[in-house]
Image (cartoon, rainbow, N blue to C red; front, side, top):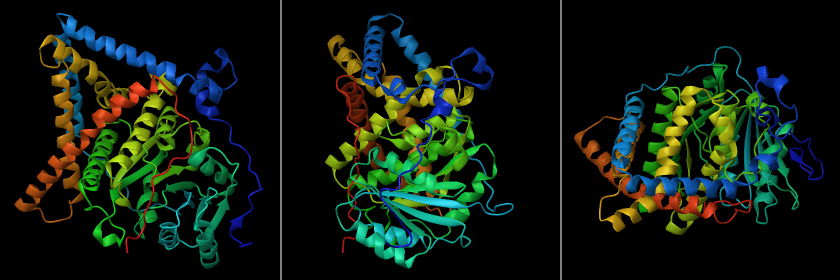
Length: 476
């Protein structure tokens, strides 16, 4: 047995199940409520019933707006409110971060949960094991979730080559998917900061030296680096220019990173995106580790960290590159998972959100995001049907137009920010405009995904299982 592997039957101590957060009590409330933490089943059950209730309220409210004489005035008022928030976001100045660490560098544990990743795992491990960081101050853990391809053999060979590489192989009976894999390995790690990457990630050698200094502010519980599609200079498996779908994802990631930075700048919510996320160990343990009852562990962790009074920083540089989804069917399945996971967290933590546990600024920012990303797409169907039936324009037209306009502005600004160190020419502006228009057309798929997902969640439950995007690796 290689020195850096770990026996399957060496079990681990379970983390308290989200007890710090889900106890639904603050320090000054402990004497007034029961001390038993809210169990996982009680909080995460009944999602279908909650989704059906929300769907009913949104649909009936949209129909009521069409029938009420004051419906148009209400929408104009809502558009004005969102417009003010949008202006604040657009003109916010991104935070400036310390580029160097004051004092000793903290230890880092780099985690990758992998299942049947023989095409990409070798390249990832080599890049992670050659990061620029003091010897002995970082370790790399690969959790092999019972892979049935050549992933175990590849990892066994690499473990002999790199001292900082450790491999944990999960049994066929292990549960919890990616969250379960990360929870199982966490007690075995020693890093003060825990970094999580997907198996297809590609990173720059000084990644840790650039990201770790962002944790100098004590309230920072996590940092998310910008995600990007693999570029031509990243190797043979680059696919940023493959087709309409990968080009759209490139623009979408620029939009997301820009919005993240702007929202953080106004005191709003920064969000984790799974690949390229760094979490302070104390913050991770305070909210009970990764949630095994969700299909998007990163989005769920985002809410729990903020509800537990931690901040999440987002940075454009460095970026973590990953493979893009190259066809419409695979993209549809991936985005449905993302949409459902994002929607689940509102259903799971709605009571804590309404109690303003995040703080006023974060709660307001989160509600504005929920309105534009989830409520409006859900209301689009009844709005369109009522518009056809009454021979009039959709009543949600003004607020929808504002939302699309914000997407266009954010996408252009995000693409421009990526090129901030390059000479800016008229031809560059024209290219960015074309990329923005193409990306905006691509982003229309979210309208269909969101509306269908919120409706489906009201009808049938989702069976939790490991679902992964297939990574092709080198195209040679």
